[in-house]
Length: 342
Ligand SMILES: NC(=O)c1ccc[n+]([C@@H]2O[C@H](COP(=O)([O-])OP(=O)(O)OC[C@H]3O[C@@H](n4cnc5c(N)ncnc54)[C@H](OP(=O)(O)O)[C@@H]3O)[C@@H](O)[C@H]2O)c1
Image (cartoon, rainbow, N blue to C red; front, side, top):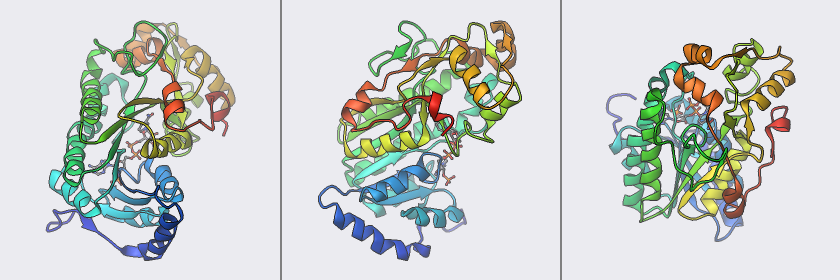
């Protein structure tokens, strides 16, 4: 961001045409419409969330770091604001000007995941989950937001003991792999800060492994390509249970959390948690890829680190019962078995 624009900057840009559209929609859903500030509005979830919120009648302010992405936000129906989530003044300024009723935190910076150096790969995301969360909460408190919805994750954060499918009450991992400790601490920080904010309705959404257009699990995406090239082997007993969620379903659940639900944590996953031994060969077949290699755990650990081995052999799936019950949400893709092809 240029010198002299240390405060969050607003741009009308080409959004004028959208302004009337927004007003019309807001008027048409009398009483239910709220103003939603989406941090991470340009991201994989954000760019599906914004149009859904607009279509539901809400007014949306979308935050990005990147001046050049403002036009895309206008096209989605949001008013863009440029601010760096790691700068508390910029965040306070952006939220202060927007005066939202609800904040949605979808900030991540997940580069290609090197499971051997898991915490290093998640370092920036961890800052967004700690400092970024704190800045948004403090800015939200200053304007009195009624609801604060934040992205978290299922899978490796859950304890790797007991049942194979976890509910929100189940404990997180007390002894994470060494290279995942900082990332789990960041998740714990975000979840405690959001649900502990007694001045607002703090809602944490633990998404499953996202798949679908624009994610790494889609045609041309990193993980699909690894499977195609036979670089994603079955490790050890391949008993790690994965819960997936289609990106469109994750966005729908997030609209649900803007409109419904109470302070607390919700797993946002499909109906079909499955061990790696089940979903990986099925997905390889669907992609027309050769059968995945099978390697012993120690070989998997050698190439993917302890974090990689844990994800292939020990992680747990999650139940979506609470989200379905309380967020008025049903996944349109209840199983990855059909969803991967969608
Ligand atoms: N549950 C899951 O499986 C899960 C969760 C998250 C991501 N992913 C995967 O990871 C892939 C890559 O995700 P990603 O995290 O790199 O990007 P992303 O989902 O494309 O978006 C990250 C968002 O955070 C914003 N952001 C990041 N740092 C910021 C900062 N300092 N200040 C303001 N905004 C900031 C970005 O804004 P600008 O870039 O516009 O500035 C963008 O809107 C996704 O496509 C998805 O497949 C999976």
